[in-house]
Figure 1 (cartoon, rainbow over the protein chains, first blue to last red):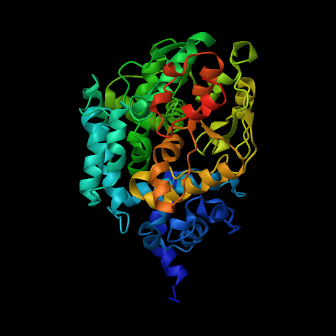
Figure 2 (cartoon, each protein chain N blue to C red; figure 1 turned 90 degrees about the horizontal axis):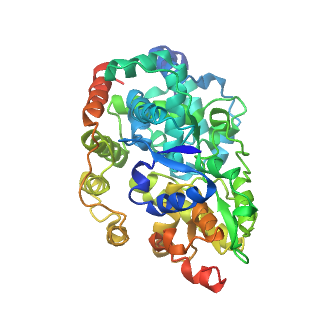
Length: 188
Length: 288
């Protein structure tokens, strides 16, 4: 097992942890490791660290490990952890804020699919105001290299009249553009 | 009652049957649907995974537009959209900094938002009674699947139902004349948008949910969430292929079954849009 100096780690990650607390409104220091979050997490089997371990890592200042973890991108925001936490920590909110921070730092590690998906999704809304599903599917499959993903359900979807081949732009695209520009300007 | 209605991207595309059935049952229940004018996507999972401002501003723009229609209540049938709009209104009213950002971005000032943001179950639960039922769904055995987004986290949304063992769909199904079977997977998460980025998770969770539903003796699964519906219905064939199972369990929206019980013909409730055909089951029970 690798040794770490918690005092040094905490000193180094002080600013990040303060920002995390400010943005999420949550204090990971409140966690006393009962592991209810991990016990109830429906996607824990696909994570590299269970949610309770992420909490402990934050307490020890292991910020790089947390930001590089697959866990923060695997969390489905179902909030079962939040509903059951005896310390009233909104763990799903913490995961959400960690994702945002990792996204801004361009830290994706194993989460290439998530990077591509969220980027294509947000670009689609930025261009049309609404999600253009065909564009999302194409962008996702090209970006991830999983060219055949869900091609089996595309045709049935189209046959059932659930897929429109062309995008539809909303009238207020100028407002959407202003919102996107503003987000870029304030860096949030 | 005038209801401000936000269909969202799902209901105008891949979840059309929910849109169709909501529109079919609302009139007879005294609900006048008014679509939010020129609505935009709420940003889904991606906006709140990638930034703070857009995840608030995108749904907030819709809330402001809904407010102007003079409706008393607002609903987004997709629970993910509902959650985003509920939170956006809360921020609009309570988070002065975010509100100022939105006002700066759009160059307008916004008042307090008072429109009541409800999820779809809340819209119907007190407006639907046995007096609306003309064709009880006798003999239909279902499990009700709420998924996660509708009931959790309870402190934020103050949903009237129990977050671990909700009963509101049971009440609605009981009024419809169907039999609800108790089961332990009511609020398990289906994996939601991981269906795009980590399909193994959604297939495994879907397999577990379908298996427990089957083992519980249900003929069909009743849902209230578009993401759950798609992951269990549209992906049922993928799950069968992956796990060599042979599930053939219809996954229907509670609004489709309400419509059927109200005597509305099946072809006006979007049953033809489902992937796992529900008609053989409904025929065998003489419900069609």
